[in-house]
Image 1 (cartoon, rainbow, N blue to C red):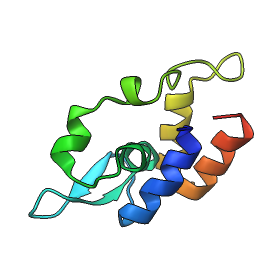
Image 2: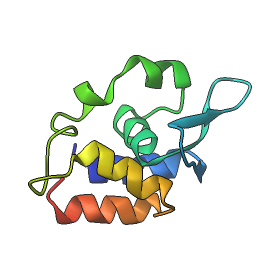
Image 3: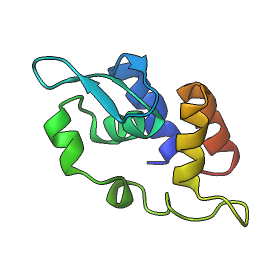
Length: 101
């Protein structure tokens, strides 16, 4: 699954967008919010269970996430920067789709 589709799927499963952290959990250990990278993990794994989410690394789930996309920027870092600058997860998914991810 492309990371842009995974983010879109994850947004449907969790709550609010977070800045500076992958997930926020309730007392049952279920994610109630996530950043763009967290939403992608939720979307590809199809769960909000934090234990399952944390056992699966983004490197393994999204091969190439740590590659350079434009000759100088790393996809993972750009996603984190965009998220933490307040760009919506949907907008980040749109950008990823525009670069074929």
